[in-house]
Length: 276
Ligand code: ATP
Image (cartoon, rainbow, N blue to C red; front, side, top):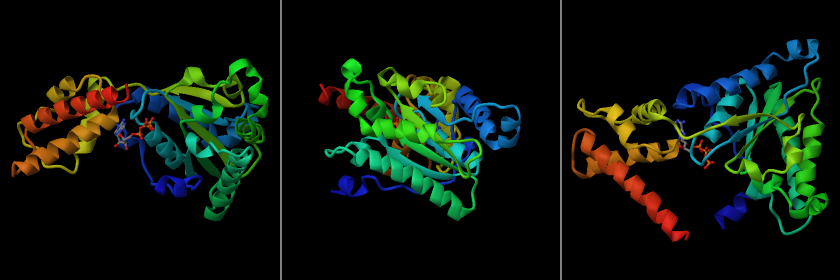
């Protein structure tokens, strides 16, 4: 019931900075470079550069794509509006399209009300709306995707407030080529699983509010958690705290973290098995 009620509802922003995103140095840098186009709008039009309309974040689940979109909104001092692609899937033709229209309208209104010159619209699971159609024929009838393209094509440099669409997907190869053309998703940024240094950074961010024992080696934990996403690393820190608390330990010890790594790893395995 909850899911149904939330359909199409717009969730408000939480201010977040790039500092709260661990690792992802290259993705952050590429994103900031792209956002500077939005920030220095006057320069951009002086040089006759095409306005940036859409940024596509691609990569596995839980790597921080949503965090990056929120940080992008804060960086450009924009209002933030988010939805998931699945919220636009409707049984009745035209409902998804009108939701897209409403979302862009609401973004403009919200920005105006807040006195901001730009709005960031984040759509997670964009492949649900913008997926490839078999045979290419059906797409003509896909009003939701068409509406999204229409909205993108309607964004102009001179317009105020400016709209920036950020899409996220972990299945880039599934996207319809219409979305990937210049003037639509102009920038593609890969958000990959973190390397060891990135994992260390993410673990430290999520350890900030936790009592860690002095003996804890974050480097070792980062090594043991090879292949983990940011979301999994957040779980590791959380689970380790639960183990420590259960043992009535004053602090989180190395072994609590190792146990938590095993638990998160096992959890993944059972998840995968249950979907078989
Ligand atoms: P999905 O594709 O499943 O929507 P996502 O890439 O958007 O995933 P987020 O929603 O940004 O992932 O991440 C989920 C949670 O995992 C975050 O709220 C945060 O707690 C943690 N997390 C993920 N990546 C990072 C990161 N790079 N730094 C810090 N925390 C992270």
